[in-house]
Image 1 (cartoon, rainbow, N blue to C red):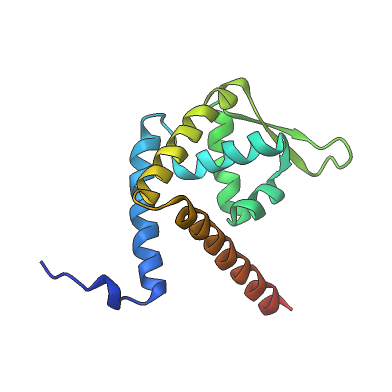
Image 2: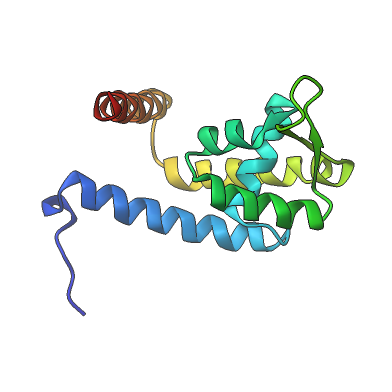
Amino acid sequence: MFHCDMNEIPILGLLGIVSHRAKNTAKGMYQEFDMNRSSAGVLFMLHQRKTMSQRELAEQLNVTAPSITSLIQKMEKSGYITRRPDEQDQRVMRLSLTEKGESLIQSVKDVADRMEQILLEGMSLEEKLLFRRLMLQVNENLDNYERKERA
């Protein structure tokens, strides 16, 4: 089997490899709760914000409107979320968690905590904080780039 020197891989490639491996590891953990990473993200976001429109949720999760619509339909059918028309604007659907959805939040948090332990094992507290700050900076850089591209 051919092995690449990981030190020679460009950052974009390394980011892709690490992201793919982390997603696959988390996928296995979420399957225990009959969930996937996307539905766990929806649960967590709605738990934090209590209620959101589909558009707000799609923006927060950085997914397209059609993909969030099918995910929401599946989660509603499974009894994890409810959709209700917005009180001010009947065209807007407000999403919120059901009791069944709320009951899974701790499991979602447990998976996130376990993944964080795996990903950051062997790092000092300072390195963990620096890693988080750098990830936030990379995300902000992408936001700035996307805003410039749309302008």
